[in-house]
Image (cartoon, rainbow over all chains, first blue to last red; front, side, top):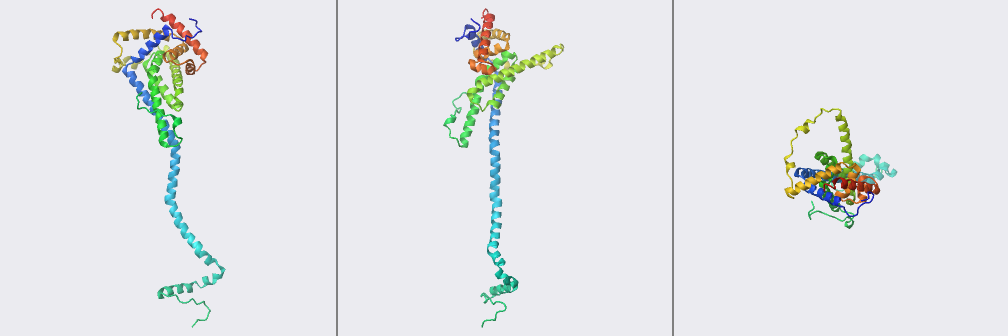
Length: 138
Length: 207
């Protein structure tokens, strides 16, 4: 055969050597087979580990962020809401009254209005508000 | 490993979303790699064994090749695994051969050196157990033929040996063999032709 020409059909030497090789594979002893199986399991376990770690790399930060968001919603949210509503009530109802310049007189006579308030609670009926300095009505 | 319970999924038929689908695909890839390794491991061992002439070294090389394939190329399409696996295997074989040459050169200066572990090592009982396949006479005949072939292959230059084993024993085509050997297809053809020519010259009489 020409050394530069590759045979399309296996020649005698090729066919016989392949048959001898295949037979030697079939006759492989149990110890080698066992060690090869262990090596294969180790390689497959490695691929599994890499796949798991890849998903963990992706999912762990997302899970962490989700956990932080849930904690924030459950713990911090109600606190903010409660404090916020109290503050909002004060700001909405009291602050304009307190800051209104027309009511500065009310602030100056705060003790009188406090007494008036207590008195109305004790009697069950609110007395008529009398402005200081005004003549009493009969 | 080749049972009907193995899971084979067509990725293109799967929806893009859904964790359980992704898990099935991952499981399918793992099973596919396992099937591939099971299909090549014994032949790969024999090829490495012929090149290295040592069972333990051949087992180490095959194990390394399996691990490297899983680590580096496990995500690649399974059609690429075969030439990649044999490329890794051949590289590891060459590494072992180089290391052995260096070791032999160093130990050549220490003629009294004897590896005590190797000297007192007892044979593994399992190694003595063969598969009850062919009869004793056939095994002897096959074993003798293989011994002659291994001797002739061992005398070939490394690249011719690689080309012959990958093409003839493993059945890789020229392109796959070129990929596994890291050379051109023309070089594969040349190496293979020369190997066949030399083997025929050496074994023609005996076979």
